Length: 411
Image (cartoon, rainbow, N blue to C red; front, top):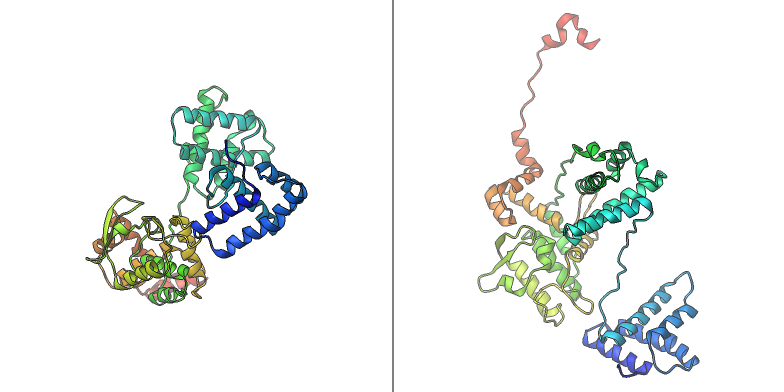
């Protein structure tokens, strides 16, 4: 049985935990203010000495209205923090409410039955989650068409739905096809509706990689304010993307063991391909990393180099790095119209510089860690100067062509 704590003892324990995890003084003071001026006066008024989650729930029920203001959201967060610390003795970094995709109605029940079938086949949780997502979109489409019975679905509904999907069409088609195959094999429907998308084809438009000139890349790098910890970290991450072409996934997973300071190299196994690459640790890149490690990175036992600059200072993720670099490019003053502006754009820009300097494809392929030169050849589309050299002169047309049959060409 846990020992009872007064609310002040619990608050003091939370504050001590925050200080141990290097939370900023501003955030600690914010929590302390809310507990002292909101929750504790409520408990004093109710003559409650010992805190438990029911006290927090009662406070929220009596004091938080339907339309939640920013300060009320902070109060709810402060109460959740107390609850978690009292129960577990620790506080997780963030609270994220998982997205629930309910499959309701008769058709939704059949979809849930199909997903259970996938579980019996031992399909991975990721696969089942993806199928649930695609089926929930299809169910939403059917509800808008006022279709609630599986027998009402015809081939036109399936083809029309698939044609409206602009993201992950391969996954959508696969999920819908397997769902209706399941229904047919289980004799829930009489017609095999999979035939409508059995040979479904979509046009995958070739996209040109987004690239930036050497001048623009320099402007992006120079725009970063390196007077604080975040700037030092972001500058080092940006150089790893722009000078070495590392993907966000590899920057996030970069550890101290990957850097050989004596030989000035970075050696790592790429997350996307699993292929090991050995890159030179350029002087500017090495100095930026050292500057971050000495004056920006918080004390941590984490083996990963790049950490969040807010407590509890865990390793950054692919998404957070992509977001950080995207914000840097977006605020650098460089025109990003019709161009992507994340770490992959920096990688494409590096490939463009290689091509401008007439570096051979095998060398570019090795530098970018491609599995074959076939992947590298996609960058040939952005080498405008080389493409111009391949252009053929348009032959002149003889005047007799226009004068034939009395010049009827102009009529």
